[in-house]
Amino acid sequence: MVIKKVVVAGGGPAGLMAAEVMSQGGLRVDVYDAMSSVGHKFLRAGTGGLNITHSEPFDKFLSRYGPRRAEIEPLLRQFGPQDLRNWVHALGFETFVGTSGRVFPVGMKASPLLRAWLKRLQDGGVTFHLRHKWLGWNEDKSLKFETPEGEISVRADAVILALGGGSWRRLGSDGAWVNLLRQAGVRVEALKPSNCGFDVRWSDHFRERYNGHPVKPVILTFKDSFRQQGEFIVTETGVEGSLIYAASALLREEIEANGTAIIQLDLAPNFSEGQVMERLARPRGSKTMSSHLERTLAIRGVKSGLLREFAAREDFEKNEILAKAIKGLTVPLISPRPLDEAISTAGGVSFKELDEQLMIRKIPGIFCAGEMLDWEAPTGGYLLTACFSSGRAAGLGVLKWIGNRHESS
Image (cartoon, rainbow, N blue to C red; front, side):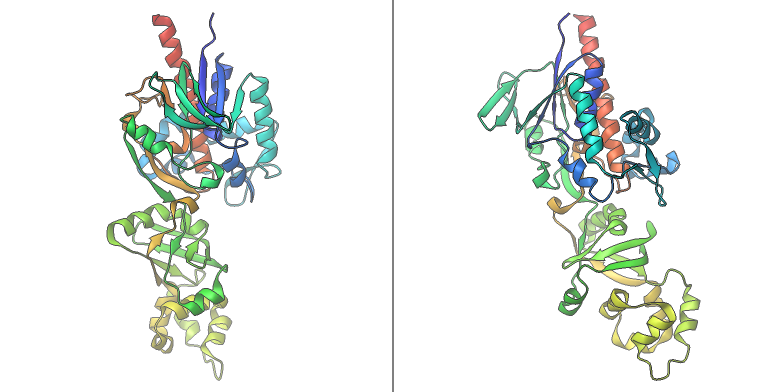
C-alpha cells in the first residue's frame, strides 16, 4: 500500500490540528511554515494567559460568529468548546473556567502546551519544514515554496492551506495568499481588521495626559445592536481593548457605510440616571465640579477627562444635561486601526467556494482552514476554537477525499 503524502501550508492551530488528524489517519504529513518556528501567533495570543475557549451555553457561543454562524456551526458541532478542552486534557494539561467564563489551561501558558503538541505530532510522523513560504503553484501544479536556499517544488496528493489572515505580519500572517488564490479563480473577500482599535480625534491635552489609561468600569452602547459592560484603553490615536474589540465588527461596518461610528459610554454604570441627577444636585459648597464628581459618583481621572473632552463647558452647569452625558457620553470613532495592528481579520476565502469538507471546488485536493476563511469572532476563546475545529474538519475532509479516490481507482 502506498502511503499518500499531504502538505499543510501554515503552522498555526488550524494547520497543526489538520496535520494531527491526517497523521492519525495514516497519511504522511509535511507541514511548511514561513517562520523559523511554528505557532508564533498562538504563542502571542497566550502572552497574558492562553484563553483557549469559553464555557458559556453552546447556543450563545454560536451567536458570537454573527453572519457566519451558519457556516461555522457544523464545524463546532463536530468539535466544540468541550471537545477542545478534552483535547487539551489529553495533552496532559488541566483546564479551568475563569470568573468571566473564559477557559484557560492550568498555568495559563501557551508554550508548554505547544511543546507537548509538537512532540506528539513529531512522534506521530509529522515532518516540519521551516522558513518555507508558499508562493503558489508551478505550471505542473506542484507547490512552489521560497526557502533560504532558493525556490523548491513539492508534490502532494492533497494540500491544506492554513496561512492565517492578514494581521500581525511580523508573526507570519501577511495575507500574501489572497492574490495567489484570486489568480487561481477563487473568490476571496477583502481582508479587514477585526478585534481592532479605532481612531478618535483627541485634543492634544487629552492625548498627552491620558494615553495608556484604562477606562473601567464602563458600559459601551452602539445603536440598538450592542450594549456591554467592560473596559478599554485610551491610546495615542484612539481606543482599544476588550470592550472595543467586542463591538469592532459593528463599528467597522458602520464606518465603512457612513464614515463614522458614534458610541455611547455610560461612565457611571452602577447608578441610574435619576441617581446620577440626585447626586449631582447635592450641595458642593466651594468644591470644584471635578471634586464634586469624584466625591459623589467616583468619576475621576480619565473618566473626568472624557467628560471634559466631549461635553460642552456649559453642560457642567446643568445637572440634567450633565447626567445625560455621564450616562451616555457620545464619542465619534473615525476609522479602524490598520489591518496589521488587528488581533484578527475578517474576510477571506468565501464559503461558497468550498464544499462541506472545506475543499475548494475549483481546485480539487486543495482545502482551506482557520483564519483564511471568511469569518470573524470576538476575543474570548471564540477565535481559537473555530481555528481548531476548522483545521480538524479540513483534515477529516482530506482523509475522506483521498479515501474516495482510492476506492474509485
